[in-house]
Image 1 (cartoon, rainbow, N blue to C red):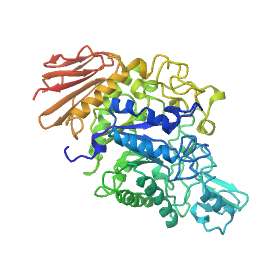
Image 2: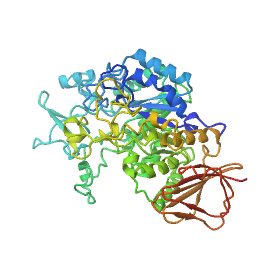
Image 3: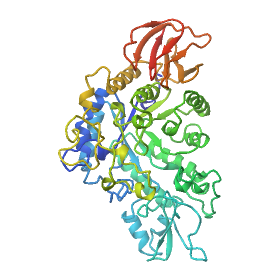
Image 4: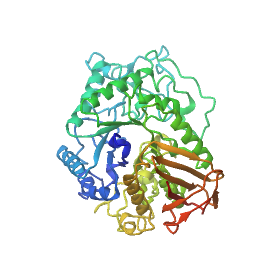
Length: 531
């Protein structure tokens, strides 16, 4: 691993800026608040922070409706605050990644204001405008996120514009070379300010079928279980060949600023389509998000099979990655419960590849309960029951009334257990979730095997998932009990001889084992094997 890139060795930590730390008492997190807690992140041991959008925005979708790609919204601070954040992070050896939202803008972006002004405006073709069908209906049957037509009628100009998300988020026309160059320049703007890369939002949606062909219906659609847009199979709007080609151009722009910059990408595609975004000969996205752990059944045999399939599907130049939590899905501790969240942390931080850690997961933060009058997420209205506010609640720093997040009223309610589940309560507790994360991150930094690609699955039964991480003579056995009952790990040919360096139950540490291992319920072990 001597030649490995920083993002291959490191752990990336996602911050949702509105919910991290409020420095001025308005109830909304900001850039100075992030700077104020950089020492915490350095102490924890993360290598990079990824910031969800901080651009000027009407905040219909809380920053994912961008009104200016080259500035900071006043609610978060200023460009000077951003520059200070980059400088302070770099001084601590941490990188800074920005969310880049290329699929759509806000309807308040000057580009769309011009585009909407008339059919002959020079920026008309910067967005996807189409005439109605002969019957006056939408140009195609494509559905948006809420399961309604993805075409929005504009009375002023007598055409439809295309949007996947809210009415206030019109899609850019990435077939237009002027759009491409303008968006590439937004990358250059931030790269010149010292950012170390980008997470690309909804990358697979960039380009739509130019013939506007209707999508086929989905025979497997489950009403009440699936998102409404899944009534059709979106073959004409998602993962177009043109999008994959555009990725190569994005990569070239980023590579203008050196070979240590990195691209992460949100795709949400089947495995074979996801790995295609690595490109040919490594000219695509370095980290196309592998999001299977976000929704997978917590089943040892199923997860073991998926890990094998995922690693086998990677191209020669493809580096693995793992995502266990983010701002769009319920939190790990809410999905799996506090005990299994500890086991999940060991899984995330010992699989081969780059882990992406969501803020608050390191303390076992759970979803907040959001009463109807406190709902902020537009998705909650578009798709009832799917709101994302619970997992975006403020970070829990201490046991005070506002959890140390703000001196004002938090923009979202806090989780009910914030008085006991917080950084201050866990920082010096050897049994805490925070201590477990810090120790795992420390082991990764000291081990070549845990940050290598060396991985050997170990035969196991029932709820036990096991594998060996290797690099030369350094070998680690990871044994995880994903269930509530004791489990035995004694596969043929494995005589465990080594030292238990880390256990989710703590009292096993330091012990040597020979032969098989009995795992207690909800237990994970990290064993350094003898050479």
